[in-house]
Length: 331
DNA sequence: AATGTAATAT
DNA sequence: AATATTACAT
Image 1 (cartoon, rainbow, N blue to C red):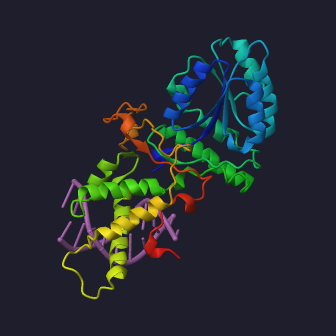
Image 2: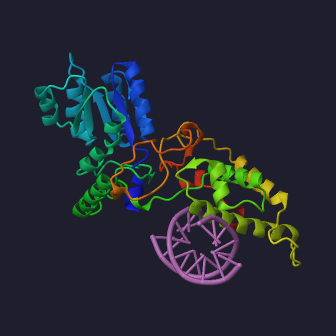
Image 3: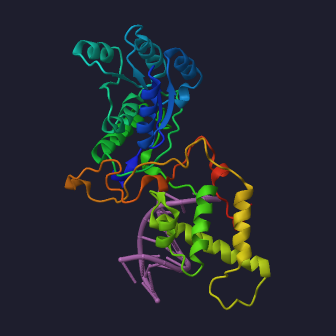
């Protein structure tokens, strides 16, 4: 339920003149399941923002001491577009922090940043959303067990903001109604798992293990399997125009399976750029978080992270493009 | 305890 | 329309 929500896909823009530190930041943010864009200078970053102000949810900007360009970002971008901006610096003396905070920074973080600090930066997006009605914030959503308390707080805050503004902010995101989308890639993996198990042995739990997709639940696989078998029955019926049911309970004809694979692969949508294959570092079980044992990213993961995918969907893409279509109900 | 199925909900 | 959830049987 609520404790399983995580704002995956939050689009973070990082600006730092140190390119190697940009890499570090990128890795950390990706581990948080955020989408990352990086720039090593303020000028290019600014021009990017001006063309893409709807696609940036949060800015993390280094404190460029000599020129104070970061102040410029704050005053221009933050106030103009309402994009929350976090300043980071290795120098954290109070007067500096004060200056940036009073100029609109959402937070001031001291380098080097740990992932624990970056995990929670999404909160700034929620807090800042008031008055940002012109922005379309299509944030991909999915499930995680992290930040139980803060997540519920933030969604509660969001709720009240939506009520106050009466719909102007409703397109921000509602973390509570996220659903898995069976992309063709996901479906292919599902099919591969089913086929490798064989029609008799393909049961949700085994399929789930073979697929190795993070956050995918047994129930989701079961639901998909149910529909998949419906699909098989239906297509085998139309194939043979069969009024005499075959001896086996499930039509195990390879042709329908094959056709399914062909159909899906004919729509060759490989998703390399938008992170559907993104590897995230999450642990799996949902248990009682009130027990006080806070889960850190990856610390309870029995599996090596790189063999897992993470399912996500990008709301920029319309579902019809990525969703697997059952051919028996086409049209 | 996990699964299959159908019905129902979102 | 697609996915999630539920209820019940196995």
